[in-house]
Image (cartoon, rainbow, N blue to C red; front, side, top):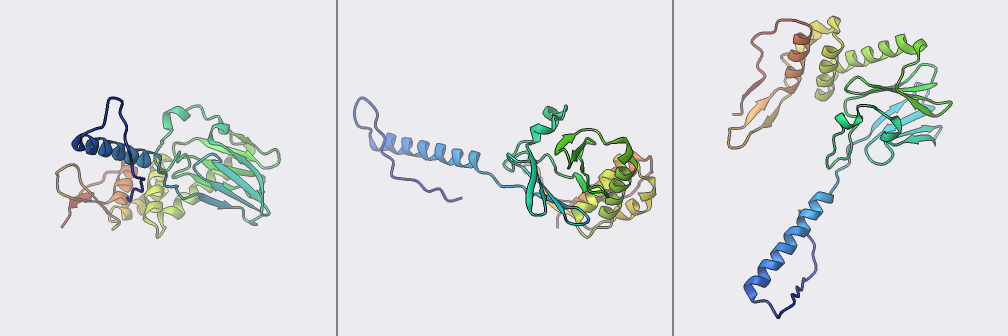
Length: 238
């Protein structure tokens, strides 16, 4: 990080400072300015974009003041802040970071076939359904949409499980375990050999290779009481 600053002149009542105390004071001011810059820095989390089948509607899930923006034929139809959803458990799942409130991370979002609703299945199981006619959000899936929504969610999970994107494979595995999708067990077994990995270390300990997709697959299989043995989840980095 490069910190830009002006020449600082410190004045303290009682007379001029000596060189050493002046230097210490300047360092303290610069350190405070640096910390303030770090604290205020934001790194936007990439939005999640969802289109309807006919592309008449496009929704953008994002962090920041407008958490959900729905466009209709190129113009803004409606927009909502996360607080507008009135989610009861909000205080328990809010995750504030330099990226802002990433409420939509790992969510499954889609427009229904009739293009009358936007459906969002959040990571922890909560649904948000926006009626496009009334432009109002609800936390309840309409009874006549239950079958379609369930089928769409499961279809997305299956697609994620076979995705070329490792994070989608991980999310697919996690969702498959949450929903006890036993028909995905063969694919989950395959993912216990997934090559995706990342490096991490704790303190002064050596670097470790962690296979995050494998971990998600193993946990999903265990959620369905499937015995899993001899899967390498971590190993020393060479």
